[in-house]
Image 1 (tube, rainbow, N blue to C red):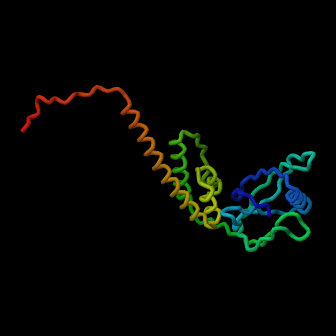
Image 2 (cartoon, rainbow, N blue to C red):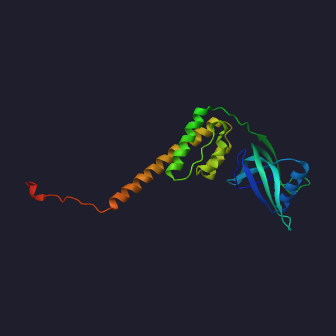
Image 3 (spheres, helix red, strand yellow):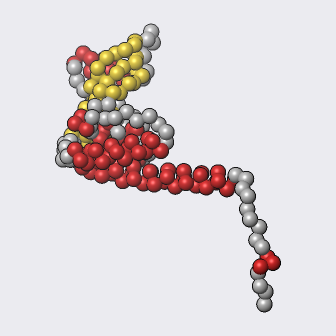
Length: 209
């Protein structure tokens, strides 16, 4: 186990700088034994969910033993029990249960979410790169929508793609509505700040009692 205050989703590239002795040992064991390790998320002073990752490459090794490594995230897991230091090792270990990744949505739902994402990017004047619907999965979006750490952690715990996309859709709809209102407000402020010709009220034509 390599606990971090970071969240990684299946398929994501995970670059790490290794400098503590316990994690130097962990990476060495993964290299020699071709085993994976887990990155449980440290949040709210606890560890409950995380992601299995696989070492892909040790990019750099420094004179002091520190390393730059590249890993790839694989499966999400729930921590059943946690051991701060495994027997005979410097690093932690855990018993975990892997979450099934249930793909239960069709392309129409994916297209709707991608359309909302493109609308959000357009509102923010950020370039949008089209995503092939057939290859699309919610995990590729989660870091690209301005979600909070807590929101990303909620998504990490969802096994069903339908639940994740419903959550993402709701976030996008809400965010788009807020940005549209901000843009309207900015435009109103701009218009009210321009010089205009106003017709003064003609009080002579007002009758008084």
